Image (cartoon, rainbow, N blue to C red; front, side, top):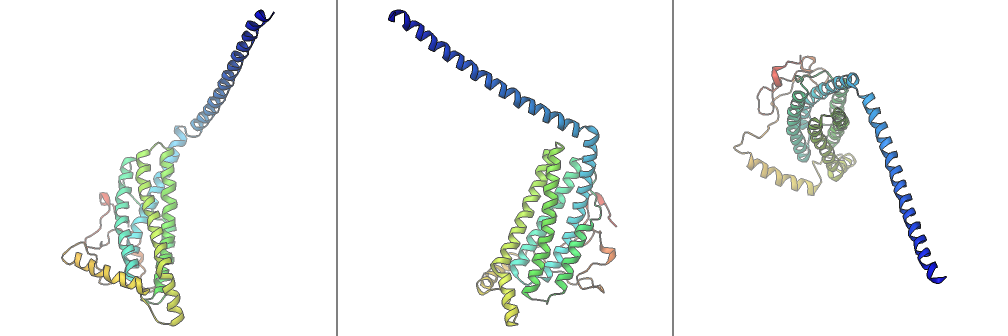
Length: 295
Protein backbone atom coordinates (compact mmCIF):
# COMPACT_ATOMS: atom_id res chain seq x y z
CA UNK A 1 0.00 0.00 0.00
CA UNK A 2 2.79 2.37 0.76
CA UNK A 3 4.36 1.77 -2.65
CA UNK A 4 1.10 2.64 -4.41
CA UNK A 5 0.16 5.60 -2.18
CA UNK A 6 3.37 7.58 -2.73
CA UNK A 7 2.86 8.24 -6.48
CA UNK A 8 -0.80 9.19 -5.85
CA UNK A 9 0.16 11.66 -3.16
CA UNK A 10 2.81 13.22 -5.39
CA UNK A 11 0.31 13.41 -8.23
CA UNK A 12 -2.28 15.12 -6.04
CA UNK A 13 0.23 17.71 -4.83
CA UNK A 14 1.29 18.45 -8.41
CA UNK A 15 -2.32 18.85 -9.50
CA UNK A 16 -3.05 21.19 -6.63
CA UNK A 17 -0.03 23.33 -7.56
CA UNK A 18 -1.11 23.49 -11.21
CA UNK A 19 -4.65 24.53 -10.20
CA UNK A 20 -3.20 27.23 -7.94
CA UNK A 21 -1.11 28.63 -10.82
CA UNK A 22 -4.12 28.59 -13.16
CA UNK A 23 -6.26 30.47 -10.62
CA UNK A 24 -3.53 33.08 -10.16
CA UNK A 25 -3.31 33.61 -13.91
CA UNK A 26 -7.09 34.03 -14.11
CA UNK A 27 -6.95 36.69 -11.41
CA UNK A 28 -4.21 38.56 -13.27
CA UNK A 29 -6.16 38.43 -16.53
CA UNK A 30 -9.32 39.76 -14.86
CA UNK A 31 -7.34 42.60 -13.29
CA UNK A 32 -5.84 43.50 -16.66
CA UNK A 33 -9.27 43.44 -18.29
CA UNK A 34 -10.68 45.78 -15.63
CA UNK A 35 -7.79 48.21 -16.06
CA UNK A 36 -8.23 48.17 -19.83
CA UNK A 37 -11.97 48.78 -19.44
CA UNK A 38 -11.35 51.78 -17.17
CA UNK A 39 -8.76 53.14 -19.61
CA UNK A 40 -11.17 52.71 -22.52
CA UNK A 41 -13.91 54.55 -20.65
CA UNK A 42 -11.51 57.41 -19.85
CA UNK A 43 -10.36 57.59 -23.45
CA UNK A 44 -13.92 57.67 -24.75
CA UNK A 45 -14.79 60.38 -22.24
CA UNK A 46 -11.87 62.50 -23.37
CA UNK A 47 -12.81 62.02 -27.00
CA UNK A 48 -16.38 63.10 -26.30
CA UNK A 49 -15.26 66.12 -24.31
CA UNK A 50 -12.52 67.29 -26.66
CA UNK A 51 -13.92 66.57 -30.09
CA UNK A 52 -13.16 68.98 -32.90
CA UNK A 53 -16.00 71.33 -32.01
CA UNK A 54 -15.03 71.76 -28.37
CA UNK A 55 -11.31 71.73 -29.10
CA UNK A 56 -11.74 74.71 -31.44
CA UNK A 57 -13.58 76.61 -28.71
CA UNK A 58 -10.87 75.78 -26.18
CA UNK A 59 -8.16 76.96 -28.55
CA UNK A 60 -10.06 80.21 -29.15
CA UNK A 61 -10.22 80.76 -25.40
CA UNK A 62 -6.51 79.91 -25.13
CA UNK A 63 -5.60 82.56 -27.73
CA UNK A 64 -7.75 85.16 -25.95
CA UNK A 65 -5.85 84.48 -22.73
CA UNK A 66 -2.56 84.82 -24.61
CA UNK A 67 -3.64 88.28 -25.76
CA UNK A 68 -4.54 89.14 -22.18
CA UNK A 69 -1.11 88.25 -20.75
CA UNK A 70 0.67 89.84 -23.75
CA UNK A 71 -1.01 93.13 -22.89
CA UNK A 72 -0.21 92.63 -19.21
CA UNK A 73 3.51 92.00 -19.78
CA UNK A 74 3.89 95.14 -21.88
CA UNK A 75 2.12 97.23 -19.24
CA UNK A 76 4.31 95.71 -16.52
CA UNK A 77 7.43 96.78 -18.41
CA UNK A 78 6.38 100.40 -17.97
CA UNK A 79 5.41 99.87 -14.34
CA UNK A 80 8.74 98.19 -13.53
CA UNK A 81 10.64 101.23 -14.77
CA UNK A 82 8.63 103.52 -12.52
CA UNK A 83 8.98 101.28 -9.48
CA UNK A 84 12.71 100.87 -9.96
CA UNK A 85 13.11 104.65 -10.06
CA UNK A 86 11.09 104.94 -6.82
CA UNK A 87 12.96 102.20 -4.93
CA UNK A 88 15.49 103.07 -2.21
CA UNK A 89 17.29 99.77 -1.64
CA UNK A 90 19.94 98.88 -4.18
CA UNK A 91 19.05 95.22 -3.73
CA UNK A 92 15.45 95.95 -4.71
CA UNK A 93 16.54 98.11 -7.63
CA UNK A 94 18.74 95.31 -8.95
CA UNK A 95 15.92 92.79 -8.56
CA UNK A 96 13.57 95.03 -10.56
CA UNK A 97 16.24 95.60 -13.22
CA UNK A 98 16.72 91.86 -13.60
CA UNK A 99 13.01 91.20 -13.86
CA UNK A 100 12.65 94.00 -16.41
CA UNK A 101 15.14 92.15 -18.63
CA UNK A 102 13.33 88.86 -18.00
CA UNK A 103 10.00 90.44 -18.88
CA UNK A 104 11.36 91.68 -22.21
CA UNK A 105 12.34 88.07 -23.00
CA UNK A 106 8.94 86.85 -21.84
CA UNK A 107 7.25 89.18 -24.33
CA UNK A 108 9.41 87.68 -27.09
CA UNK A 109 8.43 84.17 -25.98
CA UNK A 110 4.76 85.08 -26.14
CA UNK A 111 5.28 86.32 -29.68
CA UNK A 112 6.85 82.94 -30.48
CA UNK A 113 3.83 81.19 -28.96
CA UNK A 114 1.48 83.27 -31.12
CA UNK A 115 3.39 82.10 -34.20
CA UNK A 116 3.23 78.46 -33.10
CA UNK A 117 -0.57 78.60 -32.81
CA UNK A 118 -0.91 80.45 -36.12
CA UNK A 119 -1.90 83.84 -34.72
CA UNK A 120 -0.49 87.36 -35.03
CA UNK A 121 0.82 88.79 -31.75
CA UNK A 122 -1.70 91.23 -30.31
CA UNK A 123 -2.92 92.40 -26.94
CA UNK A 124 -6.34 92.92 -25.44
CA UNK A 125 -6.73 95.32 -22.53
CA UNK A 126 -6.54 93.42 -19.28
CA UNK A 127 -8.55 95.11 -16.56
CA UNK A 128 -7.06 92.78 -13.95
CA UNK A 129 -3.45 93.81 -14.42
CA UNK A 130 -4.38 97.48 -14.89
CA UNK A 131 -6.11 97.37 -11.50
CA UNK A 132 -3.08 95.75 -9.86
CA UNK A 133 -0.72 98.32 -11.36
CA UNK A 134 -2.92 101.29 -10.48
CA UNK A 135 -3.35 100.08 -6.91
CA UNK A 136 0.40 99.50 -6.57
CA UNK A 137 1.33 102.94 -7.87
CA UNK A 138 -1.23 104.61 -5.60
CA UNK A 139 0.16 102.74 -2.57
CA UNK A 140 3.69 103.81 -3.44
CA UNK A 141 2.64 107.44 -3.77
CA UNK A 142 1.12 107.33 -0.31
CA UNK A 143 4.50 106.43 1.22
CA UNK A 144 7.41 108.75 1.93
CA UNK A 145 10.06 109.16 -0.73
CA UNK A 146 13.43 107.45 -0.10
CA UNK A 147 11.96 105.40 2.74
CA UNK A 148 12.09 101.68 3.40
CA UNK A 149 8.31 101.73 3.90
CA UNK A 150 8.04 102.72 0.24
CA UNK A 151 10.26 99.74 -0.65
CA UNK A 152 7.83 97.52 1.27
CA UNK A 153 5.00 98.96 -0.83
CA UNK A 154 6.96 98.30 -4.03
CA UNK A 155 7.58 94.68 -3.04
CA UNK A 156 3.90 94.09 -2.25
CA UNK A 157 2.82 95.70 -5.52
CA UNK A 158 5.24 93.56 -7.52
CA UNK A 159 4.30 90.35 -5.74
CA UNK A 160 0.62 90.93 -6.51
CA UNK A 161 1.57 91.18 -10.18
CA UNK A 162 3.81 88.09 -9.90
CA UNK A 163 0.98 86.02 -8.43
CA UNK A 164 -1.32 87.12 -11.27
CA UNK A 165 1.31 86.02 -13.79
CA UNK A 166 2.01 82.73 -12.00
CA UNK A 167 -1.70 81.84 -12.10
CA UNK A 168 -1.97 82.83 -15.76
CA UNK A 169 1.13 81.04 -17.06
CA UNK A 170 0.41 77.91 -15.02
CA UNK A 171 -3.12 77.69 -16.41
CA UNK A 172 -2.03 78.43 -19.99
CA UNK A 173 0.68 75.77 -19.84
CA UNK A 174 -1.88 73.16 -18.76
CA UNK A 175 -4.33 74.23 -21.47
CA UNK A 176 -1.54 73.95 -24.05
CA UNK A 177 -0.84 70.37 -22.93
CA UNK A 178 -4.56 69.55 -23.15
CA UNK A 179 -4.58 70.86 -26.73
CA UNK A 180 -1.53 68.77 -27.57
CA UNK A 181 0.70 71.85 -27.89
CA UNK A 182 3.62 70.46 -25.90
CA UNK A 183 6.17 72.84 -27.43
CA UNK A 184 3.99 75.80 -26.44
CA UNK A 185 3.55 74.38 -22.94
CA UNK A 186 7.32 74.14 -22.54
CA UNK A 187 7.80 77.80 -23.50
CA UNK A 188 5.08 78.95 -21.12
CA UNK A 189 6.48 76.81 -18.34
CA UNK A 190 9.87 78.48 -18.73
CA UNK A 191 8.26 81.85 -18.06
CA UNK A 192 6.26 80.36 -15.18
CA UNK A 193 9.47 79.29 -13.44
CA UNK A 194 10.95 82.79 -13.90
CA UNK A 195 7.88 84.36 -12.31
CA UNK A 196 8.09 81.98 -9.35
CA UNK A 197 11.78 82.80 -8.92
CA UNK A 198 11.11 86.54 -9.04
CA UNK A 199 8.44 86.16 -6.37
CA UNK A 200 10.83 84.23 -4.09
CA UNK A 201 13.54 86.86 -4.58
CA UNK A 202 11.16 89.63 -3.49
CA UNK A 203 10.18 87.63 -0.41
CA UNK A 204 13.82 87.13 0.52
CA UNK A 205 14.54 90.85 0.17
CA UNK A 206 11.60 91.68 2.42
CA UNK A 207 12.36 89.08 5.09
CA UNK A 208 16.13 89.48 5.21
CA UNK A 209 16.29 93.28 5.49
CA UNK A 210 13.65 95.61 4.13
CA UNK A 211 10.78 94.76 6.50
CA UNK A 212 12.95 95.11 9.60
CA UNK A 213 14.52 98.33 8.35
CA UNK A 214 11.06 99.75 7.65
CA UNK A 215 10.01 98.84 11.20
CA UNK A 216 13.11 100.47 12.71
CA UNK A 217 12.60 103.50 10.50
CA UNK A 218 9.12 103.91 11.92
CA UNK A 219 10.24 103.46 15.53
CA UNK A 220 13.14 105.91 15.40
CA UNK A 221 11.73 108.35 12.88
CA UNK A 222 15.04 108.22 11.03
CA UNK A 223 15.33 106.89 7.51
CA UNK A 224 17.71 104.01 7.17
CA UNK A 225 18.60 102.76 3.69
CA UNK A 226 19.33 99.21 4.85
CA UNK A 227 20.66 97.29 7.83
CA UNK A 228 24.40 97.78 8.31
CA UNK A 229 25.47 94.45 6.85
CA UNK A 230 23.17 94.81 3.88
CA UNK A 231 24.32 98.38 3.33
CA UNK A 232 27.97 97.34 3.25
CA UNK A 233 27.24 94.55 0.81
CA UNK A 234 25.32 96.88 -1.46
CA UNK A 235 28.11 99.46 -1.43
CA UNK A 236 30.54 96.79 -2.60
CA UNK A 237 28.10 95.68 -5.30
CA UNK A 238 27.53 99.28 -6.36
CA UNK A 239 31.27 99.88 -6.80
CA UNK A 240 31.66 96.69 -8.77
CA UNK A 241 28.62 97.43 -10.92
CA UNK A 242 29.78 100.97 -11.66
CA UNK A 243 33.14 99.67 -12.77
CA UNK A 244 31.60 96.99 -14.99
CA UNK A 245 29.31 99.50 -16.70
CA UNK A 246 31.69 102.42 -16.89
CA UNK A 247 32.02 102.25 -20.67
CA UNK A 248 29.08 99.95 -21.38
CA UNK A 249 25.81 100.76 -23.10
CA UNK A 250 24.10 98.06 -21.06
CA UNK A 251 23.78 100.32 -18.03
CA UNK A 252 20.20 101.38 -17.51
CA UNK A 253 19.97 104.93 -16.14
CA UNK A 254 16.77 106.14 -14.54
CA UNK A 255 14.55 108.20 -16.83
CA UNK A 256 15.45 111.88 -16.79
CA UNK A 257 11.88 112.88 -16.20
CA UNK A 258 8.55 111.22 -15.54
CA UNK A 259 5.31 112.39 -17.08
CA UNK A 260 3.29 114.23 -14.45
CA UNK A 261 -0.44 113.88 -13.94
CA UNK A 262 -2.97 115.36 -11.58
CA UNK A 263 -3.40 111.97 -9.89
CA UNK A 264 0.27 111.54 -9.06
CA UNK A 265 3.80 111.60 -10.34
CA UNK A 266 3.88 107.93 -11.37
CA UNK A 267 0.53 107.56 -13.10
CA UNK A 268 0.40 107.30 -16.88
CA UNK A 269 -1.89 109.51 -18.89
CA UNK A 270 -4.90 107.90 -20.53
CA UNK A 271 -3.17 108.11 -23.90
CA UNK A 272 -0.29 106.05 -22.56
CA UNK A 273 -2.44 103.12 -21.46
CA UNK A 274 -2.02 100.18 -23.81
CA UNK A 275 0.58 102.00 -25.95
CA UNK A 276 3.72 99.87 -26.12
CA UNK A 277 5.73 102.30 -28.22
CA UNK A 278 7.46 103.87 -25.19
CA UNK A 279 11.21 104.19 -24.79
CA UNK A 280 13.13 101.30 -23.35
CA UNK A 281 15.97 101.75 -20.88
CA UNK A 282 18.44 102.55 -23.63
CA UNK A 283 16.25 105.31 -25.07
CA UNK A 284 15.30 103.28 -28.13
CA UNK A 285 11.70 103.18 -29.33
CA UNK A 286 10.14 99.93 -28.21
CA UNK A 287 8.09 98.53 -31.10
CA UNK A 288 5.86 95.49 -30.77
CA UNK A 289 6.25 92.59 -33.19
CA UNK A 290 4.76 93.08 -36.65
CA UNK A 291 4.52 96.81 -36.04
CA UNK A 292 1.19 96.44 -34.24
CA UNK A 293 -0.12 99.61 -32.60
CA UNK A 294 -2.28 99.01 -29.55
CA UNK A 295 -3.72 102.48 -29.22
